[in-house]
Image (cartoon, rainbow, N blue to C red; front, side, top):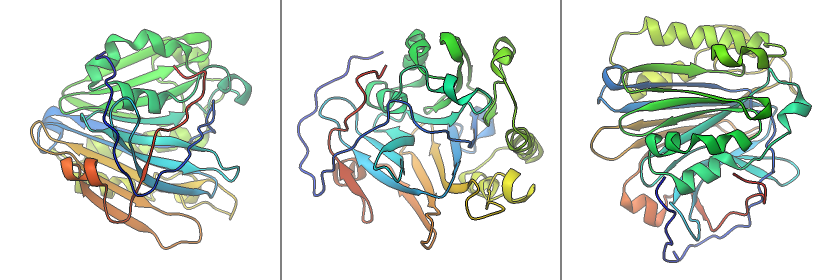
Length: 304
């Protein structure tokens, strides 16, 4: 891990007070990634569909007092709390997380939170995270996927501090909401029907599509409704209060050049919005037209 560096203060138009829950709410989502020959530019592609009961999401640039700037997809709760569901920092490290819904809720609440924020502000590559992955054992049960310009990684954190990981520089990874590593199958108290269906479907799309894959291919995958309102990759919910897809986050990181980001927001009661952003120095310095900037976020004292 490279030591966190102090950044000069950045004058921003909007500075918000941000509170993160020590343990974020469940995130029954679908995540997938490719690297090397599976990506059209030889780098990586990383995607997440964020599913939950109807609530708002927003895209913000975070400028910590210390650490790397990062662009984050925030989930906003009705109680005023927010958490980073996905993000990419100025050094090209992308991080997404999904809930370990196969673990009982009480067990999911044991351990430190704020992990996505910590990784985005503190690390500059997949390798740097993997070199320090022992620190992840203090986190609550959750699944992470990481990407930089050369490799992707999948990390499973189970109850009692058990951690399993897999790193790929040529190939694909995908995940939903139950443990896949043979060493952690014991942690699956109950595998949900939707989690199993969505995993099966994203595996079909990744293996059945011609290589290499593009950002547009990933956008197409994210909208797939093959298995109905509650079990598809893009979920619409079979009733008003049911979980549904609230946002899509897809980042394309070439071996050389500037990463590209696609974000789709499906906030309740609002017209769907889509963004395509080039993550160049201008964006890191000035933000973008529809986006705001957040100053130093307040993270839990128990963060890793």
